[in-house]
Image 1 (cartoon, rainbow, N blue to C red):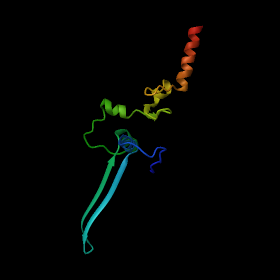
Image 2 (image 1 turned 180 degrees about the vertical axis):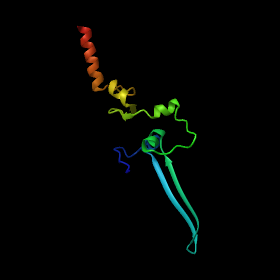
Image 3 (image 1 turned 60 degrees about the vertical axis):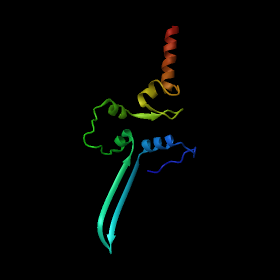
Amino acid sequence: MAIEATKDTAGTLVDVIDRILDKGLVINADIMVSVAGVELLGIKIRAALASFETAARYGLEFPSGTNVETEAWKEAQVSRENCPQCEKRVPVEELITTGCPWCGWVSAKAKALAAKMDQSKES
């Protein structure tokens, strides 16, 4: 998966960490120590750095003993999308029905519902 170029080339450390956790980072390394063509030691390393949400989306394994029945785990499994105005991650259902709690953006469905309620109050 390629990393997309952003409009803003200068980013803070928080932006970089947020991007890594959102997209995930996998490092594969094969290290071999050999003397005179004879392999003495071989090490294979695979490290993954991602948020629980990203790891679950891509099917990465979690350590044994991970309790997936906690509230935090259930919250991580809620489907989220970026707000069209502020780009914060918001649960899809909340974004569609009401809007963004961060910036106040209101969805078309919420606007239509509010207009319908205003019409019923006037009648």
